[in-house]
Image (cartoon, rainbow, N blue to C red; front, side):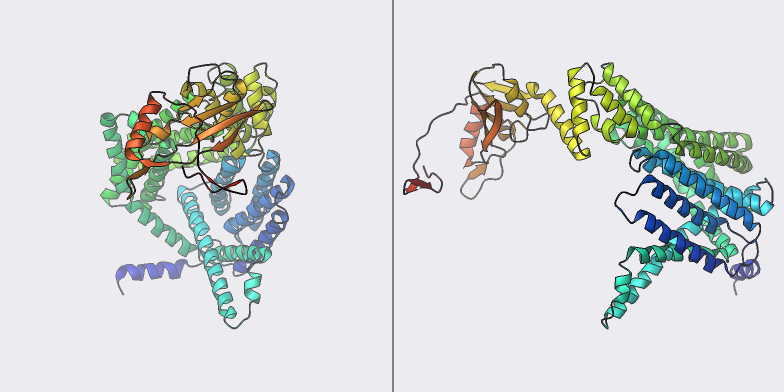
Length: 596
């Protein structure tokens, strides 16, 4: 047997079983807890389309406690594990209940909930290490090992859930071959699905925890594989930073609006791969110089990338003001900068022997991130309120016009503070602000708000894109209001149009300029072309309201006639004529289309 395989086999044989001793009942215990928790969650959330916040809070508390117990429970100091999971379940439930009605705070269900579970995910390995030590002591090797092992367990557990469902549906299909469909019907019931998910995930975690040393070995394999990627990403990031002086930062803003997320993702990737190389301790560090220098390049690149992300975020905030998403981006930039600075200082202090300093920084930063994430999960600091105050100030001070103000975000993205601000703005002394606030308050959803915003922008710019024939005259307000509609001048602010209207008239005609500016379609075999968007809309005044009564269709015409048409439109040679026509009548009733 080859030496490496023999060593690995000896490692598995000697180290099989969890660090706290074998616990054969664990797989069944965790499967039962998982099934019960999943069923309880399904019953709490699956009995209505919009469950109240108290049921949501209880469900999240149950799920958090059940999953947490599966990860941290050992025979050693079992009471500690029960207390820890009870605390995190209670904290999670109370924080969700604190937020109020589900959906009332959009940024909670996006980022605050993520912060809550990030804090719990960091707290779990901290507790596991303290439990193993029996005191408030955190050896880096154990702390880092528990963190990586939990990640491996999490993904492996869900893979096992997928395998269980694939097997269940395969068996259902097998029984269907002999016309026995009871299994298929069971798999279509929500409570059965919940039981399967909970039991499969809990059982998988229990089984793998009984082979904890093998999971640790798998974790080492995963980190070793990830470590191989460190030089690749390191070289790529360093080349990117070296090219920036020649391309300039402006290229970043022109290329995409996702500059900050991309840069932060690179920082996160660099952090993960660098830690995969430096390992749990001196004995666990990669020895290959290519990997070691790759990790050093990653550590060197993190702070500059975070700084560029900070510039990008600052520019967006300065230009468009605060929004919850931008404030969350600013938070992530600060955390990324802290890691980048810590790793740069570690490099400066240790040079090629920088890993011990980085590992020490990881412990301090881990505690800090957990505390910050838990704080941000609570409503104590409301990014919605900060964003609302900033955006309303920009509007009322005149920095942003009523037409360009993001009313949709205020009404649907800023939660309760945004709704309260809308009510205040609806009572504004500025009639334009009050009118727009009332419109958004009346919109039932984001789609209607989008339509209103688009219509407002089209209305604001209608005078700049309108030509009036036979001569420029004032347009009645009621008619002007109807022009920025899709059947008239269109809702695209850049679409120019021509209005045929005379003072006092009760009818008008609208022609979009695109009809004469867009290239015609390819000629047919008869030499005819179709002028795109050559619709003419007739608007008629009835009881004080202008309404579109009919709209023409694209007309097929010879190519030379279209050229004449374009020239006449450009010169303003547009008129309304009464044209005699020939048509078939039956019993005095016209039949078919006119033919001359």
